[in-house]
Length: 306
Image 1 (cartoon, rainbow, N blue to C red):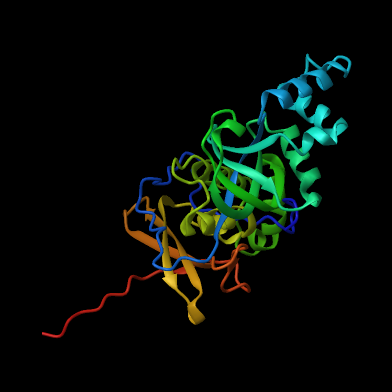
Image 2 (tube, rainbow, N blue to C red):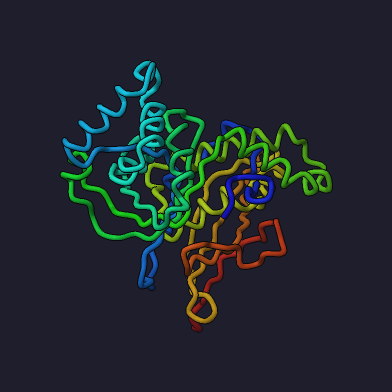
């Protein structure tokens, strides 16, 4: 998976009103009756660093003093400068993922090729509009003594890519440009709606990217344009809620239906559309890859014979 670019970012939104509230408290049916051998993560947050021991912290401070004019820079800029010049420290410090400002995961790169991605994410992690997407495999818990007294969930990171919100929305508009033109959707309205949905999903208090439903939702947020297009072309509707429902797919695969519920502003009549995401393995994907749109969603009921 590449850094967020027009080729890798996807866009889709509903409601032309940027203040539209997504019902984060709506039922998020993220549980599953089937559990894979490994549990996967698809999370979005900010990278930070902790020192696993007093000796490593003192070594860091010595290396920091050896670099002229560094103390006046932001903490993360100082960390980056020291770790880049001292590879022995970059392999010994503890990396953590902050979600909503709270330390949630302890990150361990699964390969050396991720070093540059970690450094780039760390460089901008103090900026509110810069994020990093983390894809990996969930393990046990940390030793609090190695993470500044924090008990965190361990994650073996297989992909990490940093991005700025401005880069994300720029790439989003570029990817969605043909659809915007064919559906006669204003680019400025599309951008406003997209940014609103992004903020709402990022502010969901329980979205740490570990359940099936949240992995599917975070994947669509960054990689698929359908969700934002569905919202943008319904300017007369209010995006009332986002739901996720885990379903059994063919061949034992696990699917998640991401359902958008809209309310007509004039009549208050609801409309529901959905997209199906396969989350069986570490990297999710849309089950119907040829379409950008969300299909109408209808609940199926089984009635007992009288």
